[in-house]
Image (cartoon, rainbow, N blue to C red; front, side, top):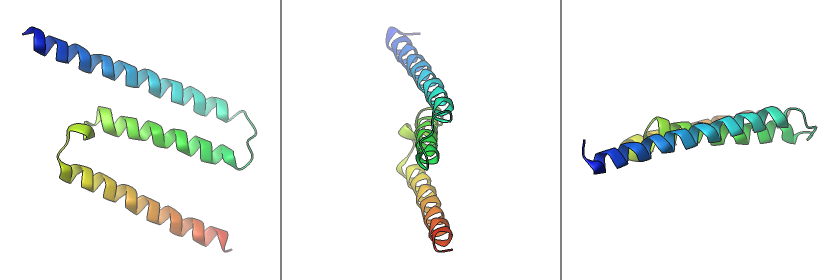
Amino acid sequence: MSTEAHAASTSATRIYYVIFVILIVCTYLTWQVAYFDLGRLNTVVALAIAAVKATLVVWFFMHARSSPRLILLIAFSGLLWLAILLALTAGDYLTR
């Protein structure tokens, strides 16, 4: 194994460990937020932390950052569809 390949492998492994630690910290934050009374913001904060965690998993562990543009387009299309469904659900819920 050349030194360049070894350096790239070490760098990739380090990134995985850093992302893993960030995910653990975010999980701890989610757990701590559950104990604070933020009113209606409890759900919003928990969902925001979950969105950050999901983004990190998709971006780094599922290798979306190095995927072709078509894969990224499909991923963002799924997120757009989720946003549409959540907006329609919220609209229905708020008008009842």
